[in-house]
Length: 273
Image (cartoon, rainbow, N blue to C red; front, side):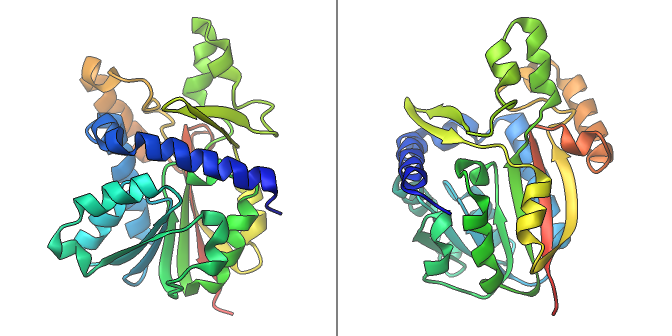
């Protein structure tokens, strides 16, 4: 159940990302690790979807929505941050406008979505679901928004990251252990504005979805490739970075790699009956 404190946390997150919106693309748009992550997520989504009508949750500055619309999909993009949506609007080209619509909407309020589809696929990229204590408030309304046989793909910050745990040996104890014992959330800060985030286990998401959806695919992201906050890694070690990308692409769906990344990608398909 979403509480008043949950709502306040959502508003704080919206404020934080609105503050970051003007510089978001310049900060993250050309980073090689970010580009690798986007390519992986997009390839995953394309491998599971059937149909052309997509709903994006937490669309941010619209990079993924513009990508998919450019490939011929229609995308209804939602976000709680007005600042992010304004950046998105400013990036729209005439060719996108017939295929992209957007709506200012909290992901915990999808039951009141204006454009209800139904959709062939729903996706949420780069840890949007981590901004809520109660993922059921986000995921349960999807049953009425997704067609039978349609898919839901979630990119979630993992409860355990092997790369991050190695920071223990550099004396960065707070970062190394921040995902441990985080049942009550951890403080995140963006552009000086603080809010809380949570690290949801795949099993918890499967339990929420099990009534109307079946698990389809599960893989780790940034398991062997380092997290994107390790700025400069790809430029300093280009051959190693390329090797790690190749290795991760081969092992992404196998244990222990699928459960030890900075993120994991999990997809569900709506049952036919």
